[in-house]
Image 1 (cartoon, rainbow, N blue to C red):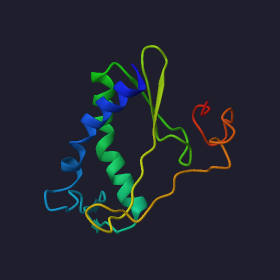
Image 2: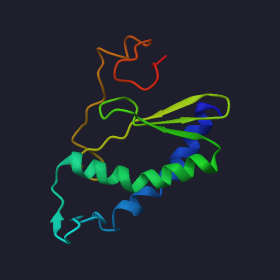
Image 3: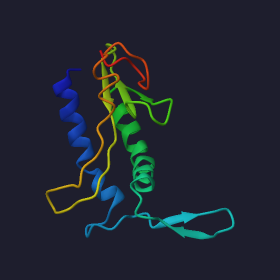
Image 4: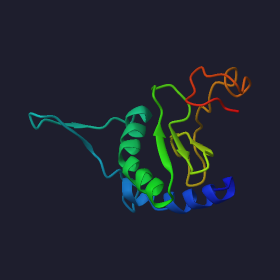
Length: 136
């Protein structure tokens, strides 16, 4: 699979994800957590909490995407490793997916987000520090 084919297929797949995690008026479909004692806790606006919920919601969709496209899906082995997900095709080509979240400041703008450690694996492409596969 080429990079262009992978990106096209993934973009097509994720175009439907928004309706899976939010309503048509922009509300999250998950409003809280429930524990084994049936206590309900509302979700904070913390992006780490919201990001994790979105990840948990979309993982089954990404696994299905992998199956439908004859790809292996590898999750990162550590919390602060890059990428969050690696898809591998039958020829061994790797496609890295790093999940990001941010706040919208308007319908077309977001506040911003971190993109990674530019002193590490992006510069030293053979490095295995904090990365599942060397960036090279």
